[in-house]
Amino acid sequence: MSGVEQQDFFGTMAGPGGTAAGPLAPAPVRPAVVFERSAKARRYRLTLRRDGVAVATVPARGSVREAEAFVAQNHDWLERARERQRRRPRAAEVWAPGTRVLWRGELAEIRVATQAGPPFVSLAADVFRVSRLDGDLRPTLEAHFARRARVELPARTWELAAETGADVKQITVRNQRSRWGSCSATGTISLNWRLVQTPDTVRDYIIYHELMHLREMNHSDRFWARVGEVCPTWRESERWLKRHGSLVGL
Image (cartoon, rainbow, N blue to C red; front, side, top):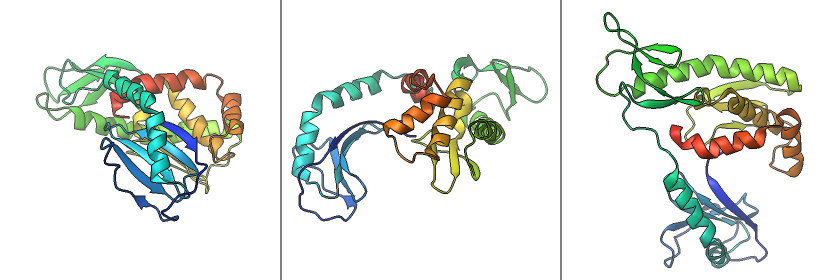
């Protein structure tokens, strides 16, 4: 599941370029938009990446000219998406005592937990050992978060898989930079370790989302109906992710 914003449109006109996948040159009249052809895409899609670059996906039988028209038609949407991106809260680049960090769904202040002996810091009720109290604590704390995630996320996924009867073969926890989770047709679910920073309800929603992909490998109405059956509050979780995902870089 990706954290980017996008607009979709089915293409109705065949154009030059064949079915080869690969980047196309940006339209000179719109240098802020990158055009990419995709052999798998079935529709025109406009995506605003986390780095602020807009990407227009051109389907295999589409044309750059029609893609340019699609971008122009969605100019207002793109500007609104860019404004939302500018307004989203961002995590501090350097973490030090006093910095507020997203942890278990809440912004918690990094506090010094011990004054003597090995240094420890606390986030809410959790305590973490650090090598030193000066400098950037982010790499050390994120390593602690990832270790917890590798224990907690697979365990919770197996629980929810048993609850829903989903046929999971393997669970991996990864350092994904643009997705909260993903699912393969072979039954492997991959989860972003940053889910331990989100509320439990949001974490569970992402897991349910990927479990339901084992039954529907798409985002059709039938897929969302399945998600709604196992996770009735999924819309609230989606809103939370859109509002707060930028605090962990998604």
